[in-house]
Amino acid sequence: MEEGIIVAAKDYIHDLFRGNSDGHDANHSIRVYQNACRIAEGYPESNPLVISLAALLHDVDDHKLFHTKNNENARAFLQCHRIENETVEFICEVINGVSFSRNKGKHPESVEGKIVQDADRLDAIGAIGIARTFAYGGEKGRSLESSLQHFSDKLLLLKDEMNTEEAKRIAEIRHVYMQGFLTEIYEEMES
Image 1 (cartoon, rainbow, N blue to C red):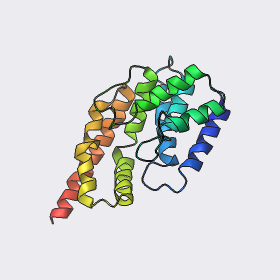
Image 2 (spheres, rainbow, N blue to C red):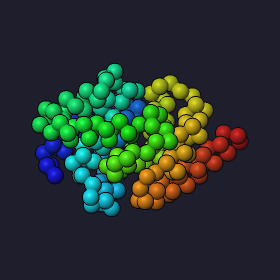
Image 3 (tube, helix red, strand yellow):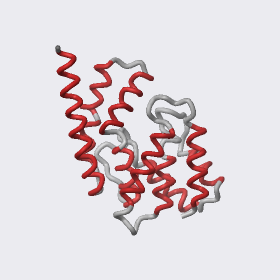
Image 4 (cartoon, rainbow, N blue to C red):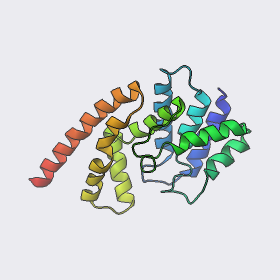
Protein backbone atom coordinates (compact mmCIF):
# COMPACT_ATOMS: atom_id res chain seq x y z
CA MET A 1 0.00 0.00 0.00
CA GLU A 2 1.24 3.46 -0.79
CA GLU A 3 2.00 5.12 2.55
CA GLY A 4 2.32 8.56 0.95
CA ILE A 5 -1.37 8.82 0.16
CA ILE A 6 -2.31 7.63 3.65
CA VAL A 7 -0.17 10.41 5.15
CA ALA A 8 -1.72 12.89 2.70
CA ALA A 9 -5.23 11.74 3.66
CA LYS A 10 -4.43 12.21 7.35
CA ASP A 11 -3.10 15.71 6.63
CA TYR A 12 -6.21 16.48 4.56
CA ILE A 13 -8.65 15.50 7.29
CA HIS A 14 -6.65 17.39 9.92
CA ASP A 15 -6.97 20.52 7.77
CA LEU A 16 -10.63 19.93 6.84
CA PHE A 17 -11.83 19.24 10.39
CA ARG A 18 -9.67 21.84 12.12
CA GLY A 19 -11.73 23.49 14.86
CA ASN A 20 -14.49 20.88 14.77
CA SER A 21 -15.59 19.98 18.29
CA ASP A 22 -18.73 17.91 17.70
CA GLY A 23 -17.04 14.50 17.69
CA HIS A 24 -16.71 14.30 13.89
CA ASP A 25 -13.13 15.45 13.83
CA ALA A 26 -9.84 14.17 12.46
CA ASN A 27 -9.25 12.15 15.62
CA HIS A 28 -12.51 10.29 15.00
CA SER A 29 -11.46 9.49 11.43
CA ILE A 30 -8.05 8.31 12.63
CA ARG A 31 -9.70 5.98 15.16
CA VAL A 32 -12.00 4.63 12.44
CA TYR A 33 -8.91 4.01 10.29
CA GLN A 34 -7.19 2.20 13.17
CA ASN A 35 -10.31 0.13 13.88
CA ALA A 36 -10.59 -0.76 10.20
CA CYS A 37 -6.94 -1.82 9.99
CA ARG A 38 -7.38 -4.05 13.03
CA ILE A 39 -10.54 -5.68 11.64
CA ALA A 40 -8.98 -6.08 8.18
CA GLU A 41 -6.22 -8.27 9.63
CA GLY A 42 -8.79 -11.06 9.66
CA TYR A 43 -9.62 -10.52 5.97
CA PRO A 44 -6.44 -10.96 3.92
CA GLU A 45 -8.51 -10.91 0.71
CA SER A 46 -9.62 -7.33 1.39
CA ASN A 47 -8.11 -4.28 -0.32
CA PRO A 48 -6.09 -2.35 2.29
CA LEU A 49 -5.86 0.84 0.21
CA VAL A 50 -9.64 1.00 -0.25
CA ILE A 51 -10.23 0.30 3.44
CA SER A 52 -7.67 2.86 4.60
CA LEU A 53 -8.83 5.68 2.34
CA ALA A 54 -12.53 5.02 2.87
CA ALA A 55 -12.01 4.99 6.64
CA LEU A 56 -9.98 8.19 6.66
CA LEU A 57 -12.29 10.03 4.24
CA HIS A 58 -15.65 8.66 5.40
CA ASP A 59 -16.82 11.96 6.96
CA VAL A 60 -15.39 14.47 4.46
CA ASP A 61 -18.80 14.74 2.76
CA ASP A 62 -21.02 13.93 5.78
CA HIS A 63 -24.40 15.64 5.31
CA LYS A 64 -24.33 16.83 8.94
CA LEU A 65 -21.10 18.72 8.30
CA PHE A 66 -20.91 19.66 4.61
CA HIS A 67 -23.25 20.69 1.81
CA THR A 68 -21.52 18.58 -0.82
CA LYS A 69 -23.04 16.11 -3.26
CA ASN A 70 -21.79 12.87 -4.78
CA ASN A 71 -18.77 12.62 -2.45
CA GLU A 72 -17.18 15.67 -4.08
CA ASN A 73 -14.59 16.27 -1.33
CA ALA A 74 -13.51 12.62 -1.29
CA ARG A 75 -13.46 12.46 -5.09
CA ALA A 76 -11.41 15.65 -5.38
CA PHE A 77 -8.83 14.32 -2.91
CA LEU A 78 -8.61 10.90 -4.59
CA GLN A 79 -8.43 12.29 -8.13
CA CYS A 80 -5.79 14.81 -7.07
CA HIS A 81 -3.71 11.84 -5.89
CA ARG A 82 -4.22 9.99 -9.18
CA ILE A 83 -6.29 7.12 -7.83
CA GLU A 84 -7.79 5.13 -10.70
CA ASN A 85 -11.44 5.91 -11.46
CA GLU A 86 -12.57 2.36 -10.69
CA THR A 87 -10.92 2.56 -7.26
CA VAL A 88 -12.39 6.03 -6.64
CA GLU A 89 -15.86 4.62 -7.32
CA PHE A 90 -15.25 1.66 -5.02
CA ILE A 91 -14.00 3.92 -2.20
CA CYS A 92 -17.05 6.18 -2.62
CA GLU A 93 -19.33 3.11 -2.53
CA VAL A 94 -17.71 2.04 0.74
CA ILE A 95 -18.05 5.57 2.17
CA ASN A 96 -21.72 5.70 1.18
CA GLY A 97 -22.36 2.53 3.18
CA VAL A 98 -21.01 3.94 6.44
CA SER A 99 -23.73 6.35 7.63
CA PHE A 100 -26.07 4.79 10.20
CA SER A 101 -28.92 7.20 9.49
CA ARG A 102 -28.78 6.53 5.75
CA ASN A 103 -28.12 2.79 5.97
CA LYS A 104 -30.14 1.67 9.01
CA GLY A 105 -30.52 -2.10 8.81
CA LYS A 106 -28.48 -2.31 5.59
CA HIS A 107 -25.21 -4.18 5.38
CA PRO A 108 -22.62 -3.55 2.66
CA GLU A 109 -21.99 -6.29 0.12
CA SER A 110 -18.22 -5.91 -0.07
CA VAL A 111 -15.91 -7.04 2.71
CA GLU A 112 -14.27 -3.59 2.57
CA GLY A 113 -17.67 -1.97 3.13
CA LYS A 114 -18.44 -4.26 6.05
CA ILE A 115 -15.07 -3.49 7.66
CA VAL A 116 -15.32 0.29 7.35
CA GLN A 117 -18.96 0.36 8.46
CA ASP A 118 -18.03 -1.66 11.55
CA ALA A 119 -14.98 0.52 12.22
CA ASP A 120 -17.09 3.68 12.27
CA ARG A 121 -19.79 2.13 14.41
CA LEU A 122 -17.23 0.94 16.95
CA ASP A 123 -16.17 4.55 17.44
CA ALA A 124 -19.77 5.44 18.29
CA ILE A 125 -19.97 3.10 21.29
CA GLY A 126 -18.12 2.47 24.53
CA ALA A 127 -16.28 5.19 26.44
CA ILE A 128 -15.34 7.13 23.31
CA GLY A 129 -18.91 6.87 22.04
CA ILE A 130 -20.22 8.31 25.29
CA ALA A 131 -17.77 11.22 25.06
CA ARG A 132 -18.62 11.85 21.40
CA THR A 133 -22.36 11.79 22.12
CA PHE A 134 -22.07 14.56 24.68
CA ALA A 135 -19.58 16.54 22.57
CA TYR A 136 -22.06 16.46 19.67
CA GLY A 137 -25.00 17.28 21.92
CA GLY A 138 -23.14 20.19 23.50
CA GLU A 139 -22.07 21.57 20.12
CA LYS A 140 -25.68 21.40 18.90
CA GLY A 141 -27.13 22.88 22.11
CA ARG A 142 -29.01 19.71 23.05
CA SER A 143 -30.17 18.95 26.57
CA LEU A 144 -28.71 16.14 28.65
CA GLU A 145 -31.95 14.21 28.20
CA SER A 146 -31.81 14.62 24.42
CA SER A 147 -28.25 13.31 24.33
CA LEU A 148 -29.24 10.37 26.53
CA GLN A 149 -32.09 9.56 24.14
CA HIS A 150 -29.48 9.04 21.42
CA PHE A 151 -28.34 5.92 23.26
CA SER A 152 -31.77 4.30 22.81
CA ASP A 153 -32.28 5.65 19.31
CA LYS A 154 -28.93 4.46 17.95
CA LEU A 155 -26.01 3.52 20.15
CA LEU A 156 -27.57 0.57 21.97
CA LEU A 157 -28.62 -0.88 18.60
CA LEU A 158 -25.14 -0.93 17.10
CA LYS A 159 -23.86 -4.09 18.81
CA ASP A 160 -26.35 -6.18 16.85
CA GLU A 161 -25.58 -4.41 13.56
CA MET A 162 -21.91 -5.41 13.31
CA ASN A 163 -20.81 -7.37 10.25
CA THR A 164 -17.47 -8.90 11.25
CA GLU A 165 -16.53 -11.23 14.10
CA GLU A 166 -13.82 -8.92 15.47
CA ALA A 167 -16.23 -5.97 15.52
CA LYS A 168 -18.89 -8.09 17.22
CA ARG A 169 -16.38 -9.05 19.92
CA ILE A 170 -15.31 -5.45 20.56
CA ALA A 171 -18.89 -4.16 20.35
CA GLU A 172 -20.04 -6.56 23.05
CA ILE A 173 -17.47 -5.14 25.49
CA ARG A 174 -18.30 -1.53 24.62
CA HIS A 175 -22.04 -2.21 24.82
CA VAL A 176 -21.72 -3.53 28.38
CA TYR A 177 -19.71 -0.43 29.31
CA MET A 178 -22.43 1.87 27.92
CA GLN A 179 -25.15 -0.02 29.78
CA GLY A 180 -23.23 0.45 33.03
CA PHE A 181 -22.84 4.15 32.32
CA LEU A 182 -26.55 4.55 31.59
CA THR A 183 -27.55 2.68 34.73
CA GLU A 184 -25.30 4.94 36.80
CA ILE A 185 -26.34 8.23 35.22
CA TYR A 186 -30.06 7.49 35.50
CA GLU A 187 -29.58 6.53 39.17
CA GLU A 188 -27.72 9.78 39.80
CA MET A 189 -30.36 11.83 37.97
CA GLU A 190 -33.13 10.33 40.13
CA SER A 191 -31.38 10.84 43.47
